[in-house]
Length: 153
Image (cartoon, rainbow, N blue to C red):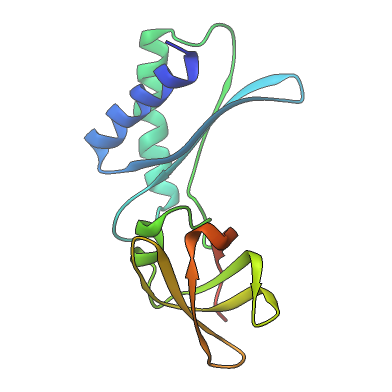
């Protein structure tokens, strides 16, 4: 089994015990040092600094006990952030009513970028009401190049 797969399994074990889910896990090199970056999330509510600390302590202890990473490394635990990427239909449904930015592969009404409120999400499309015009667009996920939430002011 590959190292990242093993790390992911261990992270998911701790996440299940602590009420979080793993949003992303990356093992990378930064300025000559190994970094294990774990992004945690939860179904309801936001991730706080205290949540990151709790997960980091438990996961760090498990990593030390398992001795799965050879040599020194830095463990970084973070939240997905307020402008998180929208990656699947569940993300769109979860954040219905929130402001999002969609970058499209093929233009709709001569637009390749739509910023607006997510109205609804099905298995194949998201409906978004554009902030500037108030017009609703049904966008197939296959036409979304990138999407993320936008911070509302």
